[in-house]
Image 1 (cartoon, rainbow, N blue to C red):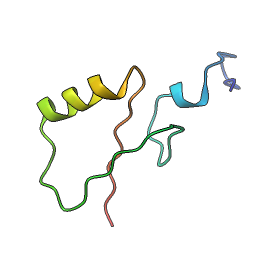
Image 2: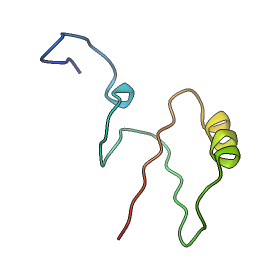
Image 3: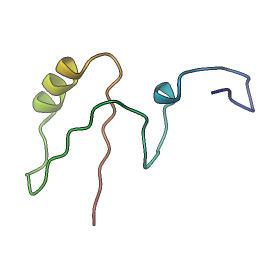
Image 4: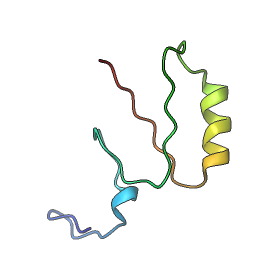
Length: 59
């Protein structure tokens, strides 16, 4: 994908920002859990690889 403003090109999953959807090949969802600790999120990111994204959802 290319940015219309600066011309930068990146993979769709590498764009940073407040998006409701991210391009990925793996998703982990936690239902009815307390807020995740920074330590837990850090360990999960290490296991998922170089491009993890964290999305919060409230229904």
